[in-house]
Image 1 (spheres, rainbow, N blue to C red):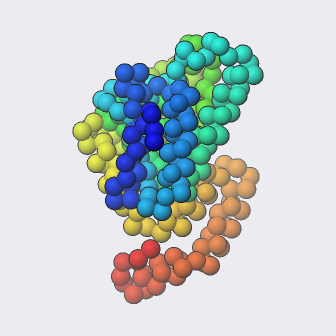
Image 2: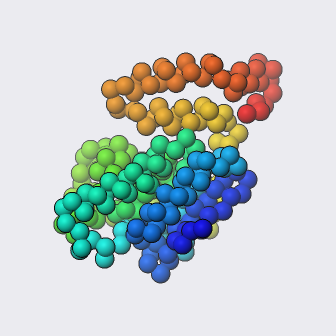
Image 3: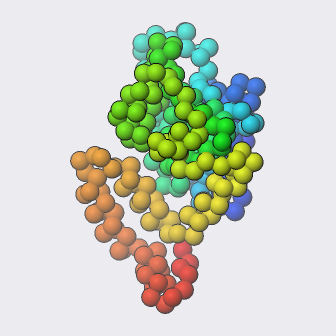
Length: 254
């Protein structure tokens, strides 16, 4: 079904593995199209509760975009490339109602860093490296990097990282809030699944609303979104089950 990805489902967790190790899992139009279809599958398949995105091999999550595709593009083509990627993949991941977590196993540079940042949070192996090196090519991030990096690490740090193309190692990324946890490469997927297994015991409806509200943080309507989504919870069976379970001192069955 996918020419550039591996796709598995186990215990409600879909694992999407970008499978171009000979190219350091670099993004090209085929990967973008496959990722778009894979995220659609995650969102539509009721067997899937949560999702992991990772890269094949021990060296790279995604080491950037396929630069060879760039030279044939003019201004209009460049803008179209960025818009298509954002709409087909990056925004689709960010706005998925199911948690999608990046398990970053090595280099996450350029489009790879942007892919990781579009996920709901990130867990990194000790050998992970993060960076936005586009200014070295006379470019800027085009898949939401300037926006999501600023939201995650703050304006000043985002300015520095994008202007210097500095590669942050896993511990530096942890310190600046770019990743949530750092673990060994061997235990990366197990640690990610451990967290997702906890999330899968919670109300799927409430988790989806958390994603919606946190994605509105910093916008003018962020608080109003939270008020509306909070109120909407009261009309759901999941809220009734969760509160009843709490009152009855038992585990909720969502």
